[in-house]
Amino acid sequence: MTDQAKRPMFAADGVAAPLRHSAFRRIWLASLLSNLGLLIQAVGAAWAMTQMTPSADKVALVQTALMLPVMLIAMPAGAIADMYDRRIVALVSLSIALAGATALTVLAWLGRLTPEILLAFCFIVGSGMALFGPAWQASVSEQVPPETLPSAVALNGISYNIARSFGPAIGGIVVATAGAVAAFAANAVLYIPLLIVLFLWRRTSEPSRLPRERLNRAIVSGVRYIANSPSIRIVLARTLITGVIGGSVSALMPLVARDLLHGGAQTYGIMLGAFGMGAVIGALNITEVRRRMSGEAAVRACALAMGGAIAAVALSRQPVLTAAALVVAGAVWMLAVALFNIGVQLSAPRWVAGRSLAAFQASIAGGIAIGSWGWGRLTDAAGVETALLVSAALMLVSPILGLWLGMPRVGARNEDAEVLADPEVRLPLTGRSGPLVVEIEYRVDQESARAFHNVMQEVQLSRQRNGAYGWSIARDIADPELWTERYHCPTWFDYLRQRNRSTQSERALHQRAMDFHLGPDPVRVRRMLERPFGSVRWKEDTPDRAANEVLPVATAAGSST
Image (cartoon, rainbow, N blue to C red; front, side, top):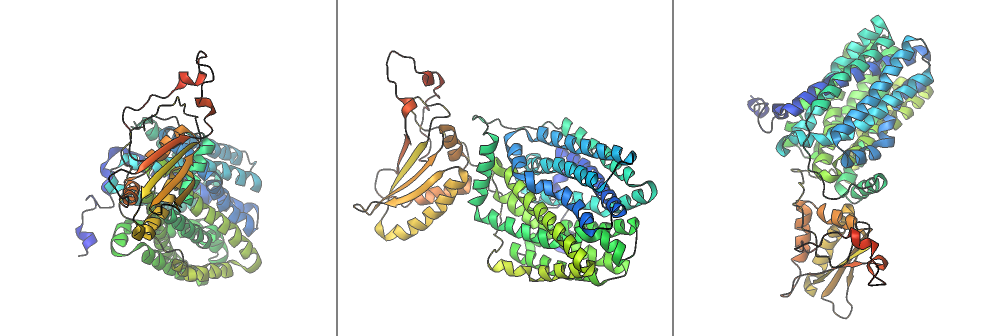
């Protein structure tokens, strides 16, 4: 008996452990129905397009229309998920998807469906789900304790792929017996349970003592966090490339069923079901794979296995052999995507979780959308078999990327640190006062200069991803032991956000830098208001408008930064 078999599924690290928590369990079951409906609609839309046009390009565009919104609005959606109540965001986004699915059903029932209208409403449904995704995924950490978060991520993948296992087959039967309109109606109806469960969920959240950022600033903050996080950048790059190459399977599946296997809607549904069944198998084994293999080794193994499976799909003319290859492809696809997803979830702190997950969704969906378009064009020019063989060859060589973009090691989630007390303030400041300049003076032994400088390069990334601008480190030419770190924040509120966004590991990094400091006096910190026009009273007898908006002076200075 294997270790995995001996380990109870509901143990703390078991894949089913999150289901012990009622909020997660209810939302997970309702999302399973929602995913089922979405997959049924996807079958109906793809098959309806094959009946309206012989163009492989337009058939592949169905997948693009569903995935492209994720790439286009992912960062705004992630910012909204971080700024507002994630439950409300999820309810609004599901309502948009429901409205699109309902309108598509009515138009199909009236016989007014055209390729352009079908793509447009697939785009609307995709937009609703693109807005829903970051809010839903970021809220998982609010439904389960940290130790079960990786299992919860895997379970969400299982939810989608259980639906993928049965949804396409059900969709094929529905389309074959009642037409595409019934598939569109089923999707609309299956959104309702998730809407009800989210409406009844009593989410507990800690309100921030600072006002929320404006949307444009929140988007910029998210982009800067990702740009200054090497581990997340690597994961997103690998995700995008995997999506572009591996998107051939889902994009060309209708044509595999029609042209290579000479089947109909039912065959198409069964093939997608085989892929989804494999994905469930992969998701059930994610915990064991993470225990036995490093992230890079697992991703490489998945790429090699998927390359072989895609080649088998291209060369097979027997439904049984094609289905077997798709089970393998689905398992390793799910493992790779889950590894990327977990890597992002465990690397991002709570304040930027929605935006980080949105970037992940944009990477995978954008890769699939771009790949779907490219594979459709190649299929029009060279045929389904050639397109799939090219995809298989690229997947087989993709592990070479690990030489330059090796997957980072991921441990437990990097939890937020405790809130710092505000620094002492003696000027009348408002939240918009700024820019604020911060200077931190270190006295470092000259023999430790190189080691200190290396640590400060990591400090730079930490400051910049949390909101600091114009960071620099300088050394006094007359006093070589004296180093000055300098950066600025646009406003006082931005500075308060920046200093409290640091995680426990970042606080430890800052302490490593301060440990280089010599002498009995502590590290000296200066916080200065640049261009302090609004803080100067020109007439003592004139009430200062800003004085009525002064923030309360902190009774105790916070930490050194």
